[in-house]
Length: 116
Image (cartoon, rainbow, N blue to C red; front, side):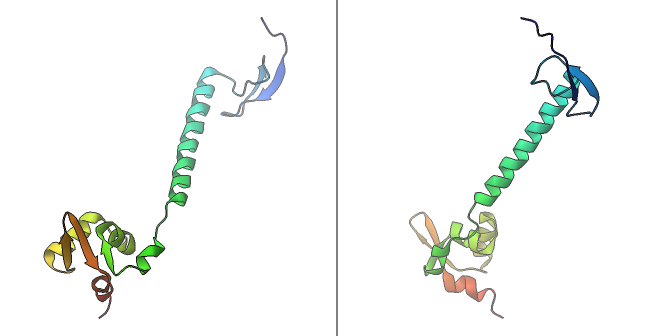
């Protein structure tokens, strides 16, 4: 079925005036439509990344109550990577203990890093 309506519109991508044959047309050409699609998808990716970042919990309040911390909790507390913590353990800056496969660090050891 062919539509015989003609609607004056402005292209969302380039801003040029054009005559649309359907109500849902937003762009003047196929090229503008592709560019607009890519722009929308890029903005959606950015928005989802921002939402993901906002939803992450940067600090766990349970850490305050514990006397011994896991590597992951020390990473959150210091804002350092896991490998940085392991390097600090290896060079002797932080003392740690192993319980099975799990490595734990005394909270007072972490606090003593910042006391001079």
